Amino acid sequence: DVEQKSFAITGMTCASCVQTVEKATRKMDGVIESNVNLATEKLTIQYDPTVVSVSDITQAVSNAGYEAHEDL
Ligand code: 9UX
Image 1 (tube, helix red, strand yellow):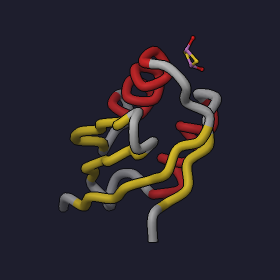
Image 2: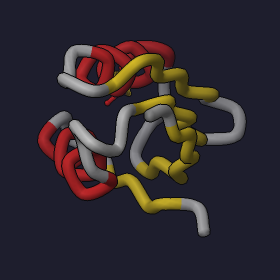
Image 3: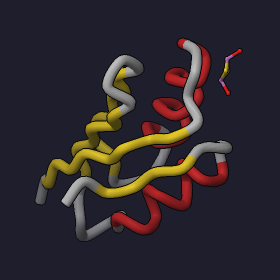
């Protein structure tokens, strides 16, 4: 299964923040692709919902030092 969701990320101010959030999420099992747009402060992620959950993703972003809120 593949699902795509986007998240509003708070706390990112430079391109290194983008790399940190992308790296933290791309290394997760079940994450297929992860891209952050600094200008819009959005994370877009493709993932397998049978392997990884939305709360796993927001937790990983939180552990990396930022806050993620699922776009509804
Ligand atoms: Mo840039 Mo982001 O100097 O937390 S890495 S602001």
